[in-house]
Image (cartoon, rainbow, N blue to C red; front, side, top):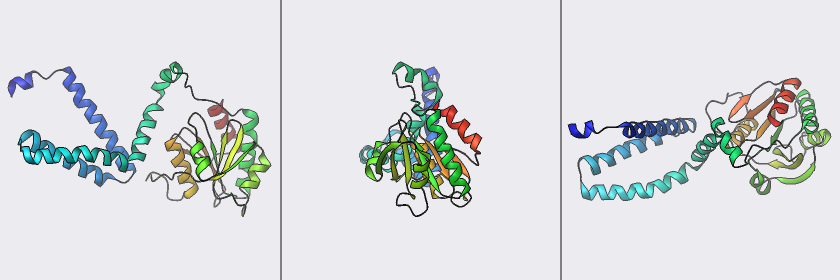
Length: 259
């Protein structure tokens, strides 16, 4: 036992630190998705498995638990696929990954210029003044084709202030869903988005804000929300909110993010 301890080296330390980091980020993801009890249950089961198979060396029970763990790994992936996807996206979207993006020529696209930004901002401000609810998604590097094809109505029109306002006009057929803008075009409207279950979202924010946060957590898209209750304009990007934006704030933010 003492000799084994003396053999403890740098790689063993790195191994322990990596496991600790994985457990920490897993804990954060489970806490955000309100699955912390499931996470604790999994840790207890793993500890029991290691105790039976490695410490007590109970071969029969150990072999049964080995089979359960091998099957349970697949079940874990299916059960927490959205959390795993979010973790992998946040890993790939980290700023330190920028050299890799450049090497693979995957640098984030900037498909919307100033001429396209101004109609979006003007439409948002008019809708905010009249308290017309709206949810506008601007696609960037990660395609949103699946959202357009499954539940949205394809439009494929030039970005136009009047068109945006008419789509979100109260009582219009597509006003409840999200509009997706891609490659300087209004591609679709009435789209259904994934809803975030994060407990960090303020309670006064409604379903549109949760949908905006959801798409910003699963992609690099910019989500603009106009509140029907308060008329305030907010933006969700990279899993974070920017609330109560003015005309100048929204224009500056979009110009910075979209080039």
